[in-house]
Amino acid sequence: MKLLRVGTAGAERPALLDPDGTTLRDLSSLVADVDGPLLADAAALDRIRAAAGAGELPVLDAAGLRIGPPLARVGKVVCIGLNYHDHATETGAATPAEPVVFFKAADTVVGPYDTVLVPRGSRKTDWEVELAVVVGRTARYIGDDEDPMAYVAGYAVAHDVSEREFQIERGGTWDKGKNCETFNPLGPWLVTADEVQDPQVLSLKLWVNGELKQHGTTADQIFPVAEVVRYVSRFMTLYPGDVINTGTPAGVALGQPEPKPYLRAGDVVELEIEGLGRQRQELKDA
Image 1: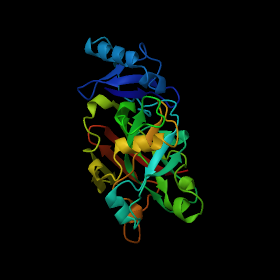
Image 2 (image 1 turned 90 degrees about the horizontal axis):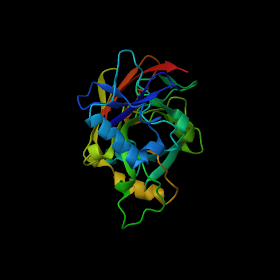
Image 3 (image 1 turned 60 degrees about the horizontal axis):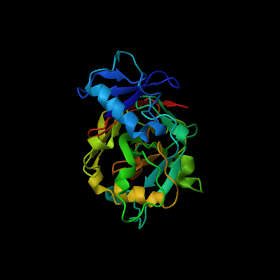
C-alpha cells in the first residue's frame, strides 16, 4: 500500500493512493491517522487492504490538496552518514568501519512539496536524497539470528537537507547543520514493505533547477538496510513510527569542485526514489 496524509499542515487526514497512481482514497473512516500505532497494528492494516480491495473507500478530490509528510508524530529520525561508497569517496572521507549515526529532530520533518528554508547566515546549504526506513515494531538488541526486516513497516523518500558550514566548520557534532527548520522533507508516500521486494536495488535521483545532480543506487550502500536496522537497535530502542535515513549517494554540493554550487533562495530541488515517489521543493530564505 501507498499511505499518505493530505490537508493543511497540522490538520492532515489519512489517505491511500490507488494502484492507478492517481486516485486518492479517504481513510479517515477507518483510522485516525498514519502513525506508529497504525503501523504496529496488523489488523488495522488488513482492514485498510480489505476495504481498498472491496472498493469501499471514498474518493478524495486531489485538486489543490496539499500532501503532507506521510507519517504523523514521528518519534525520532536516526540518520546514517557516509553510507555510500561513492559519497565517501567524493567527500574525501575514509570508508567507515561502523555506521556513522546522528539525529535529526522530528520537527524537521515537513511535506514533500513544502518550502525548504535556507537558514539565516547560511552559505553552504546542501542537498541529499535518501531512502527512509520506517519502523513498524519495537526493536531492541536485534540478534544475529533474527531478521531485521521484520521490524520494517515501509519506506519513503527523504531529503536530508544539510548546512555544511554549520555541520563541519563550527565545531562539535554534526547536529547544528542537520536540524534547521524544514530540513527533512518526507514522502509523498509511505510505501509498505510488502511492495518493496528488495530495498538494495532502488535507483535514487536528485535535480537542482532541472540539472541532474545525484543518480545512485542503494546497491552502493556500505551498510545495507538490514544491517543498519540491526546495528541501531543495539544502541537505542526503535519504536513504531521512528524513521531511519540511510545515507546519500555521490553528487552533493560538498563533493563538487570550487565554487561549490550550494543552494540559495529561489532554487528548486526535485528528487525521487524508484517506486517510492517524487518530491519538489522551492527554497526561500528563513
